[in-house]
Every structure is written in C-alpha cells, then in structure tokens.
Image (cartoon, rainbow, N blue to C red; front, top):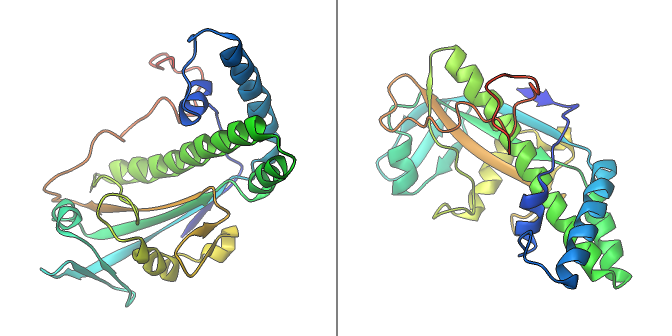
Length: 232
C-alpha cells in the first residue's frame, strides 16, 4: 500500500470551461464574464485543494467464468464480460483511490447558498478537473511502476462507469483503507468528499489486450523542462 501526498495539481483552463459547457473565443459579453469568473475560481481552487491518494496491489487467486474475481486476501469483485476480457492474463490488481478533500465541496455549497451560481458552477468544475488530474497522476505512477518491472497493464476501470455496477464500490472500500485518506462511502455508494475517484488496473505478463496509452502523459508529468514535453 502506498499513500501519495504533496502533489502539485495543474488546472487546465480549457477543461474547466468544457465542464461548464463553454468554449473559449465564442465571443460576447457573457463569455467574457464566464472566462473571468473561471480564472478567479481556478485561483481560489488552488487554496482549497488537499490532494491525497492511495493505491494497493492484490494478487488474483482465480477469475471465474461468471465474472467473479477471487483475490488472495479473501476479497472478490463481480465484473461484467467486457471487463472480464480486459483482465485475461493478469496476475494482480491495483486498487486506487484519490481525493482533493472536502474544502472545495464546502465552498461550492456556500456559494450556492449565497446565490453565487456562476462562481459555484465554475468552482465545481475546477474541482472536477482537479480530481481528474490527481487520479490520472496516481494511475500514471502505477503504469510507470509496472513498466519498470516489465509488466503489462490493462486500461483502468471504475465502478459506475461503463456497465460496471456502482455497488462494486463497496468491494473496493473493503480492500483499500479509505479512512487513511479521509474518504467515506455512503449507503448509495457515493463517495465523500464528492471530488474523489476510485479505479482498478490489471497487471500481468500475458495480458491479451494490454493498454499502452497511459504509459506516459505530458499533462501529468512533473518534469517541466523535458525536451520532449508537449504543450497543451
């Protein structure tokens, strides 16, 4: 198990605008106001982030034909056929969870209560982008570690995305000590703080459908002076 702290998040302004349903350079007074508000809330967001993540690997005992993955620690997952195919040839699973904390959630609620809807929506979008960046950063660590050990990896998958039932979030929380990073799960399988993300990655030597797209990402690499860096 590894806990990752002291992560410097990077907020992409274009991404924040996208999550608000806006695009840059559309023109018009309203868009100028949205752009200015977005920039102000991005600045506000940096003071509210408390990023932390955790990930842990668990060996696979066996994968049943009915979509049940039995793990060496006695836990299990129930998956659908599409994910089952992704996991062919895996030896172990890496379970990850990350959060930017609850300070931003509280500020968004406060802004809504004050009828500051534009600011609240912008700040909420900032939180979404921050949570996504943090999750991608930690997943990239897993991909890089696996690569250094000459392992292949699968694409990540998360409860509630695709056809994977959100109820499997409970299984993940039985495996990851989420309390160590301050994340709780409600009875309806929603995470608190809201800007939290969980995922699973398969790792092994003979993966039938290895995933290569996440082997490196300039968006989440911390080497600002890399000569091969792409500009976004």
